[in-house]
Image 1: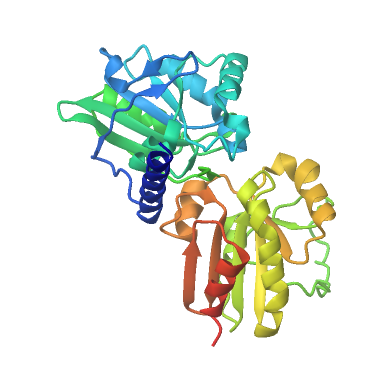
Image 2: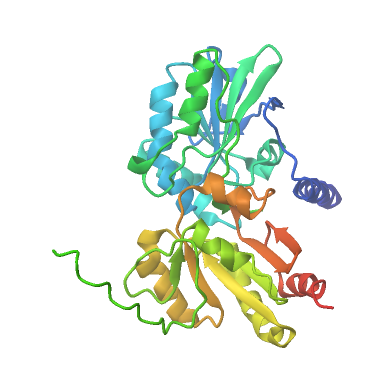
Length: 201
Length: 168
């Protein structure tokens, strides 16, 4: 049993090292993986559970990053605006909770309750999903469109162009992307950069 | 107000600090300068035969705080090799007084600290390095035309290994 555990630990280690070395992750146009991750209510959530969704706003975020916290209200607004239109927010917490105890499941539950999250807030247990997406920081957004091929990545990056002040935002990148997809148009800006907290491994 | 008055003779600046062509932001009584990207750019693109180490950090970034002493130590140890260290804080401006100033006072940092206050991140992150996703900490080491960018944390030894590549 001990040997098995060690073997698994080694596998995980090799896996993460490989992912860190290869900063690949998804590009726009790639098909994003589905997952089965535990939500704050204890239930497992997958993208395939959303039978009527036209796509998803997948956001890697957490409790402990000031940038992520600065965007919490805007993330809630995104879900309120777009869940009914077929683009629900799916939040995933990617940090290693041994490094960031403030991101443990109990803390996630408390934060979601305090802020009134209307969307799932999932634990990337084992940290297997974020490296596949290529997320490097929180918050880090992936807008996906459900196509015949699978969930196609349509936008990667920031929520908008002003982390400091929601009222001073000029361009709402995620809203622009989802609006374009809902209208059957091309996403105007497909990739943006923003400062965030590195995902804790 | 009369416009006929003769313009005053400009007073020669006694400020010996480097002049910056970009924008310096006006904050009162801060022990560091605050720049937008255009103001910062000349400070991270010098061609003066020195080795420059530029570290992007914030008081809220745990891995940044962990590696700060290593940068300070490198700055001290390699001063004789003409190494200059610049710590660029990305703290939120509203936290300058409540977090950044007390942090600087407590830790008595020897290196030059400036703050970058520029919300147009989608412009300046790729301008600083095309591979930077925006995660902190991040570091640039450069000397004249030679330049390397790191979106990662460092131990002292790792940092020293990189520095040595710039000493010759």
